[in-house]
Image 1 (cartoon, helix red, strand yellow):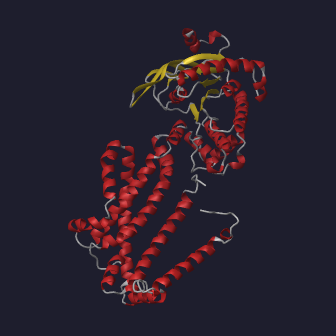
Image 2 (cartoon, one colour; image 1 turned 120 degrees about the vertical axis):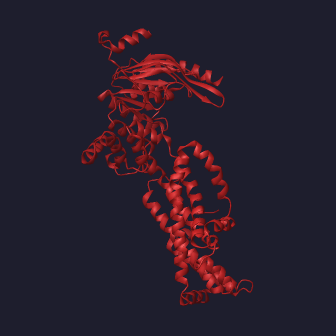
Image 3 (cartoon, rainbow over the protein chains, first blue to last red; image 1 turned 30 degrees about the horizontal axis):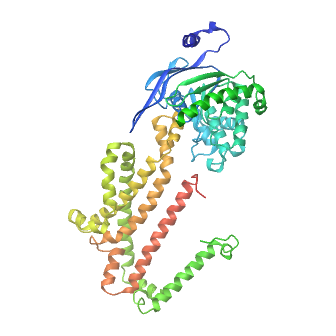
Length: 275
Length: 260
């Protein structure tokens, strides 16, 4: 199976499959702490194809955030490599955008200036940056709040700004680290729907981490289930529910079937953690 | 504490409270000025103002004020200029932190009055020793405050900037500097208060003029009214500085999340 994935990296001849955007090869990550070495990731290999929406679920402490940080270039793997568009990932790069769970907005900048920060890092300045920032804010429906400071916004609005800012950097791949994890259930479903709509429109390659199985299934084409520490890929589940999807999709028999299946694997891992 | 929303105390506007508080203080002052135990130390307002006017007539008050303020401004300025880079270095470089921090904590807990004589031995009597005393005291408090600020910068913000393509310079100028600004302003406020409270100790290093020096000399000559006037002047300078810096803080760091 591994061989198959590797040939697909370069093989347009394999038919319908899109080229591999992000290739994770045998990534191991250990942290050394007071109680000796802790293995966070134990040999993870995964291909993320262009335009693909991949969700990762797993019990807390399974290393899913660590994996995202390694793809982002914020952490270095102990061994193994990550390639993005065939280039070895060494440090951060604007080809990979990140949305953090804690929003990570600059509190001293207004909503608009937060988005402009991303544009200015791309070398876009002045009026052009102003106009573009408003365009990105339009996409998340926050034009009215352009001149507000983050502290004046609700959690859901803050995360929308963070998403707009990530989009403004025009990354090739969007890495999302439990972006809706801190939001209430209602806001979460709303942001899921918005993200779905956006993705169905632009099909930006997306690597999305969550502990919410429903969220993973409604969004993703592929759900990666990770095992408890040390983190490894336990199973890759193809979500064969066609797009466009919406919250109604959560009632469909296929959804429930997939949910039961994924839940049973995740649940086993929870039990592992509790041991 | 009871804090009923509908209680009468919530219906009084804040400016009225300032006036009420002022009237209460005058009342207490009056009481102190007639009680036999305290009347000699706390002559009532007219006598105290007279005492101040006498000092102005003698031509010493403005000299005292200028001298003290000069020492305060010099010591405070120097203290800040040294504290800012040292705090940043301490936050960024572990060896510097581990070597410096214990001693900063150690010296910070010694009252300046105790080490002034040592400084006089080194720097000589007068202005240099005064300024040195205030510099040390201000440096310590500002360094600790700014250092805390720099190490507490939310790491996610740095990560966020990095993934957006920020280089080290961008991160310093556009993330670390604004993120630390609230702590720098707090340091400036605390430093001002320390500079002022240290002036008495500093002027024990020997001085020709100065508010602290004058208070002690008036004490020796039993001129209590003028002495009280000087003490109040110190208080007024302190509150003006504090209010001014708070205004600056509000203007520059109004973006901060506050716990309501």
